[in-house]
Amino acid sequence: MPYPSQIHPGAVAVPTTPSTSPETDHEPTGLPVHQPSAAELARTAARAAGELLAPPAPVRLGDVVPAPGSVAADPAADFTLSVDAVIQVSAGAAARDVAVQLAELLRPATGWPLPVTGLPHAAADDRLTLTLTGATAGVGPETAGTDTATPATGGDGHPLVASAPADDLGDEGYRLDVTSAAVRITARTATGLFHGVQTLRQLLPAAVESPTPVDARWVVPGGVIVDRPRFAYRGAMLDVARHFFPVADVLRVIDHLARYKLNHLHLHLTDDQGWRIAIDSWPALASVGGATEVGGGPGGHYTAADYRRIVRHAARRHVTVVPEVDLPGHTNSALVAYPELAPDKVAPPPYTGTEVGFSYVDPADERTYDFVADVLGEVAARTPGPWLHIGGDEAFKVKGAAYTGFVERTQRIVAATGKTVVGWHQIAPAAHTAGRVLQWWGTNGDDPEIVEAVRRGARLILSPGNHAYLDMKYAPDTPIGHDWAGLIDVRRAYDWDPGAHLTGVPADAVLGVEAPLWTESVTTPAEVEFMLFPRLPALAELAWSPRATHDWAGFRDRLAGHGPRWSTAGIAFHRSPEVPWPAERADADRLDREPTRPIPAQPGPDAAEAPAPTAATADG
Image (cartoon, rainbow, N blue to C red; front, side):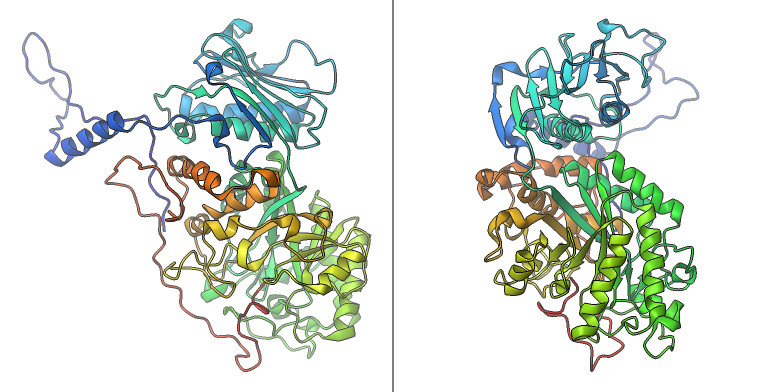
């Protein structure tokens, strides 16, 4: 499905005809004349009437998603941005880059130059400052429109500022102050500034998401927001193994995460259907193992340069990449490339179905551990973040001591790379290693094995299949997705508490929340977005916002205002009937957002032996 057409609130397209000469009242020679049809005139009139009768609702200070920790609105202090705006920022490359990204966000829709420069005076403490001030602050014609210019102003010539107090904000928190004279964001770190910029973005009209200039009044509601995250780990997972997604698609997903203050992208890089990352010491993994995908498509893989590009793009948006190499199961693509890793040393056929649990590397062969060390070593060396995910799920044919022995040895290999091991919760019975993180994807909150693992020191990332799995259908008639964990519309995604979800597990053992998107039935970027939105913001709010702000009625109303933003940005989304989406301007050229492609069932290679997907066995 293609992306929906762009919709730009505030811009009305009116058909025009060439001007005529007042002396002759004749048409200009050589110019084509367009006589609008009745349909065009009717469409134009409807659009204009719609805008007159139902102007976009003004943004309120509390409309932010995820909900901020503290909001104090001041309706008398609204700030208006103007054409002479300039951006000032504290010293340091990281803070400056946040300022540049703010300019990059605002320039397309405003059409304004928004040059970036350093602040004239350093803060007295460890605060960072990002300021939008006015051309009067010293921007000359030779610097306007560049990223090396001067400060920026709002509508009254006063600065729009972003800076930072060190107290109580942590490494990701920020304070945003909006008055008629300035907008100020303060933070201890560039990451905090970046999150503040995402909030500022939401406080501007939805038209700010337009890729082309819009004639709009750029007003920021007045007041103060003080904000910091509840959980340190806030993420989503994209399965690029079942269906391969090129680099540009992954970068777009990263942008979606950053918009809602999610800070981790977990990439499921390997599975039975395809191996998606090049490994220099085992080249056939990518060239042979990467040449398939579900349904028999061409597959694909990321070169080392591709992966570096993904990591760089994520880092600039303060998102950490968490690479997963799934072991010892889910390895058919590796066995096709290197039969020596198979228990019988015979290459299996490439697999393009969707069953699980039939493949595994030989846990009794030392060559297997050479493979594991080489692969994890190369992936770790390319990954600046602290995490290395080893999978560990659904290895049904590796049982008991053979399984726990493999996991324990693999955990030691991860530790030798300097990374912290993450694994799906099936690795819980293996011996604990320092810092170990279990990713829990169950559907029953009573899990004694996880309680015991936590007692031994494990921390948890919560991805409950019946709340957080974004490959579940919204409703019975959703054309893509699964339902083994139930139907998950927005309220079900929102109505649970990560801090109290697992019986016997204290909140301080929960590192955070992750929303996985498995792609057995998801094949295009638009389908990815359709499954992400609007559930991704719901899960982002659970991970970021204080428990005290949790309120379905308030959330659904705030979320509704994001529909026009997504439409304007060309983001596909599901118009959940649970959310009171505002009416958008009629557009005869707009494409339907709902995917309608039927998904054919795919039989497994060991239909008699491989378990059917259930709550206990579906891919997690």
